[in-house]
Length: 223
Ligand code: 5RP
Image 1 (cartoon, rainbow, N blue to C red):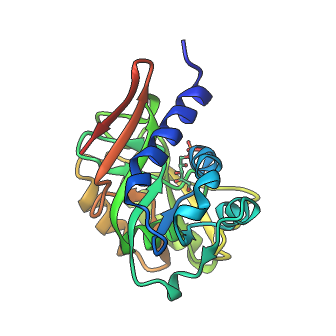
Image 2: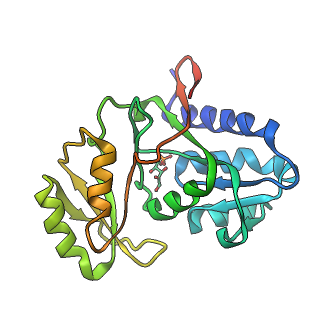
């Protein structure tokens, strides 16, 4: 029986093997954030001479890549990228996701929006029939924390401030439990529309394009 960490190791390695054939000396990769991505970065490190560098979705991933000699680029200096590789907290059968467990949701959404293909790397525990068991992270401008909370409560959610946490954008995170997310794209649009919301952890309007799922029987690729 593989442990969750071994499952993450396998999917991280599979993601490297998935992108390797497409890498050229000009390629910039988009790289997400989290424990699965940490392992992906470690697996990618030995191949750093095969591509130009990466754009990162967090200070955490930037530091890890820099330590391995992978050049980290500012998104403003990059025109595009073939792949954005990232984990998820939940992913449904339509490839909509909840992300932001690591608090990097806003930069993740920005970098992913520039990539041709979102490659989601998860272990099988992240696959769900319906999103919402994992509390939905919503990044907010601090002065709007309470007003946004009231509007999230009107949508049926129970927002709780993520304590002792400030995002890379100097904002705060509300973890919202209890939402009935029957239509993820519609919920994403409604939450995005609340003044003071920087971004919400639903990735449904633009979900994953390819999903690598690590199971006890190997890594499955779905697209
Ligand atoms: C960070 C994220 C991560 O992708 C998500 O939390 C999954 O992390 P992990 O690979 O550690 O399970 O969205 O903001």
